[in-house]
Length: 272
Image 1 (cartoon, rainbow, N blue to C red):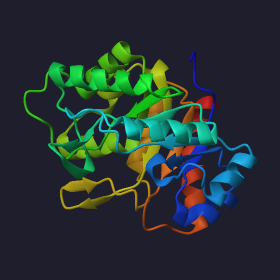
Image 2 (cartoon, rainbow, N blue to C red):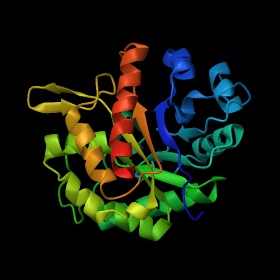
Image 3 (cartoon, one colour):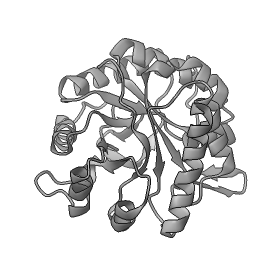
Image 4 (cartoon, rainbow, N blue to C red):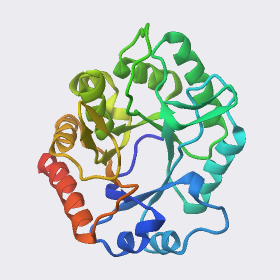
């Protein structure tokens, strides 16, 4: 796949805001959580968007590609079938693990940035890719801790992952901001180190401060500082798409439209 088509500005489709997504102006594409869809019984709203020609991209949260446990090929197969059902050009998941020793964390856990962990991740990604009908993009996650004895920065880790697997990257600028706040990483260094030519699209989301900790909630407004990270990214590369994520505490249509407009303003500023 030589490149990613221009997706524009989109929003994460959720059943709680299905009517909102349908009637919002300027939604160029949507993303669906693959685990929430049943093949053969797509939500009416998703079907309507497909009929309108709106691209629908499946986003997985449970492949656990960074874990030492064997990859669950049933989950990979489901992701691929969702992609085929909606005619998606690609699918995505995260650079993380969610299961270990038979337990499910319920969270996207960061992967130790060691070469041994990278070898495991590469093997799992390659296995998933062989069983998927479309390309795979992988997303950086928010973390409240860093594993000890790291051998690579996050940007270096992802750059080597791309070099070895030819996967795409889904860059979450809200997660970059969260990590800068909580564990002191540098978003600009991250953007310097990753192969921006392999950028599939971008996530933007809101969060909230709790004392000295920033929580990436997906349930609050997008902070200006997160838009600032998006601005920094757009100054370096034209992202094929930028998508707003909202998973709880849904605001009015007007507020969502305003957030989409703010995202589009940042993107258009650099296309200008």
